[in-house]
Image 1 (cartoon, rainbow over the protein chains, first blue to last red):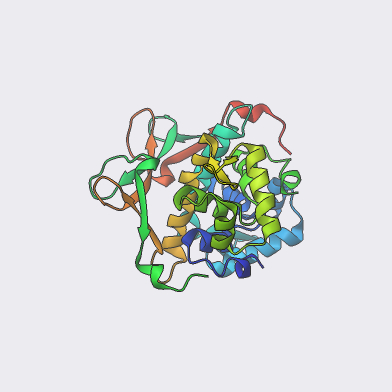
Image 2: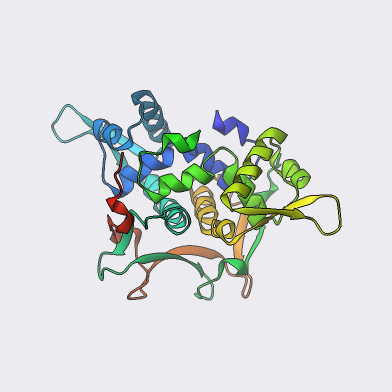
Amino acid sequence: MLGQTYDGQNCSAARALEVIGERWSLLIMRDVLFKGITRFADLQRSQGVARSVLTARLDRFVAEGLLERRPAGDSKYQEYVPTAKGLALRPVIIALMQWGDRWVASAGPPIVFRHADCGGELEQRLACQRCGEDVAFDAVSPEAGPGATLAAG
Amino acid sequence: MLGQTYDGQNCSAARALEVIGERWSLLIMRDVLFKGITRFADLQRSQGVARSVLTARLDRFVAEGLLERRPAGDSKYQEYVPTAKGLALRPVIIALMQWGDRWVASAGPPIVFRHADCGGELEQRLACQRCGEDVAFDAVSPEAGPGATLAAG
């Protein structure tokens, strides 16, 4: 399991990858969060992934609290609805897509995110919670936080 | 190969994962970008990963243009230096760490990113390039971009 192999790392990126780092995981969450696809059959059609893989990923997301499984209206089908923890992955997926747009999408971005109010294109920025300024990524100082006292591997 | 399996997906997140989605990839880039670790032996010590895996990942990053391999000063060692394409992964890794801090770091964040100028904590925001406003993640409209005309799988 992926989780086992990152266990020695006391880092929130490593812990995040334990949950969403398996193959297809982020692309499934992308479909749920940005395409509004919530049913198993629709997710399988969109992803073109084996049923067994999709089942395993969705079960894991439910167990980890990223998605809730519930009946879809009065049909016999179930749907997968994102929780707050699942919705909070949107910045991760947008950051990943924007890097891909800039560096590996030779034909231009397949999808553009726009501000619903004015139609402008969106960008991610880093801001300081104290002074409110936009911060360049090379003006960042990493330092030990409250969770750093755990033994690291 | 991971690249093969995502080939049918015309999406910049999928293309990004072809390059950086393999196990350990993002954690190696985290060490290079945020800890300033650039030598093979130091990366291996930090990651606790098999030499063969680290070699394969670093070779891939060099081939993909995320890192440059060059002599470390006048020593016999080589170091791996991030390119602009590699540096551009910082927002992805910060987004991943912040999700992990909030949702899977029970003891609090092991690392806190601070604004070098004022010491404030940092947060990622979504901003509109047209009107300049901060945009909530649920006020985002995805739409087809110039690269959407490629056949999707």
